[in-house]
Length: 311
Image (cartoon, rainbow, N blue to C red; front, top):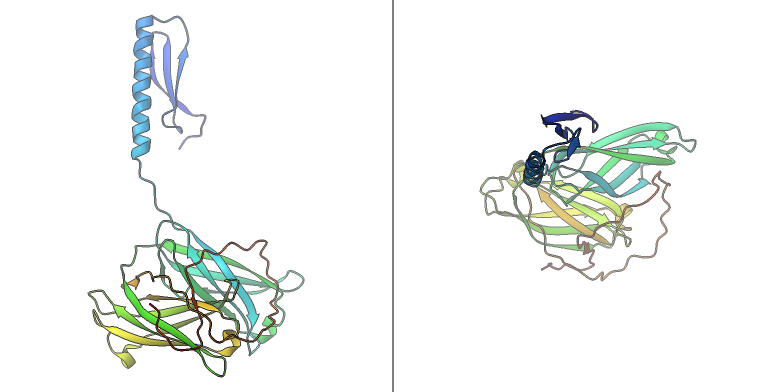
């Protein structure tokens, strides 16, 4: 492809030169190099108008290429009970094309800005449709290195892929906080497709009162334990979040996926928090992020203290 200054001669007749820029479709120039017969000039200007009209039609008819784009919406870094440093968060596909193999990489730094190490993992959902989100979790399983972490940065890579049909439906779900402070989410997942599910799973993303991700969990359905999930079959699930992170959670969202299908979007539900968790103070290690991007809410469900079924 030529530069913007490159051009080609289209017509050069009777002292009138018509040219166009190779890199700017539809940009035409007329150069009068000497006196020209008025009839010829009128004919040439008519040609120019026709060429410009044709170029405009071509530009309007050219398809816009769908592209994927993934960004980190929210993340939290913390030391777990064993002294390992973990980063939990979520990404959103902000493009117009489904993506998969979404890999999040964390690079950890000490207080002097030197790199300690890096870790990467895939998001919990394999395929992310445009506008949808997926949680992720990274673990630095080295207590000595973890104790030196002062900050971290995140990078995301991905591939574009085909969309999964939306055939998985979460029929209902509810949550309860037990006396030990653990959160239990129960629900029912239905296969609305015409194939048996392979590698079916449900992911839960937990948020604090500021809609920042504080925990994530993933469960899979083992065929050896639950058998095949046939078309039109409903299967029940339970996800537990231990008190270590549950104490920070106020709301959650759910998403399901299999090799063949993804989740039908849920209807918005809002639940009252019937058991209030005691006030807490959470000290987080500072991260190298200049600004925090606004989080587009997807109607997270409030953690409940009593068992009930959402609409």
